[in-house]
Structures are given as structure tokens and as C-alpha cells.
Image (cartoon, rainbow, N blue to C red; front, side, top):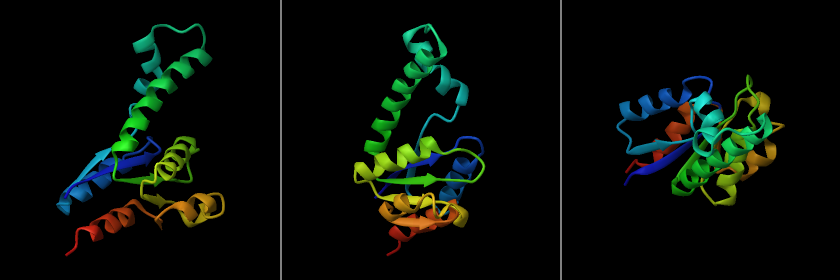
Length: 147
């Protein structure tokens, strides 16, 4: 059995690469997918595909349409979603991806520090598991494969 894991969360550090390496080290049968992590590519994809837009609002709208297509398809294919919330960045995309996972009835592992307990309490209540680190999320997935 292999699981497809959607990694939702901020794109400004290498947490995804760390979790992928840890999964490989543990020889877990996981395939990882997620949002476009090249910020420039994500911001400009609408104009790359649809052409130059008249203003920055239309540019954002075009990019968000293409990014939402990608997200919707990959979330639907995922077996489980890990949504990382940290303290440094605003996490609007993480919240949207996590809420979409809930609405699609995808199992959700919410990663958030204790300091974010209150603002994420409703989302945490909908998650299957709430942890404080990506490593703990991976340990929860590893448990699935124990015999």
C-alpha cells in the first residue's frame, strides 16, 4: 500500500524537503504532492498561460484560477493532508487547503505550535490528528504501516 500525502503550508522554508527525506529514511511508501513552491512561478502562472493582464488584480485572479485548479486536483487525489501552520507567516493558503481537505472528507493532520491553539481551535476540532511538529505528523503516518 502506498499513500499520497498533500503537504499544505507555507513555502518559505524547506519543511517539505525535510519531511520527504525523513520518510525516505524510514522507507515509508509515501508520495508527496502539494502547492507550487516556486513563489514567482505561482504568482505569474496566470499570465504565462493566459497572457498579460491589464492590472495586478486581474493578474492575481488569473494566477489564483490556475493555482486553484492544481490544488483541487491534487487534494482530490491525496489520501491524507498534512497542513502546517507556523508563527512567522500568515497562513491563508494553509487554512484554505485544510478546509478543502475537510470538505472533501480527506484525513487531516494539523501541525501547529501550542501558541496557535486558540486561532485554530475549530480547524483542529475537524482534524483527525493535531501535532506540534512535522516529525510528529510523519510518525502518525508511519504508525499506519506497522503490522
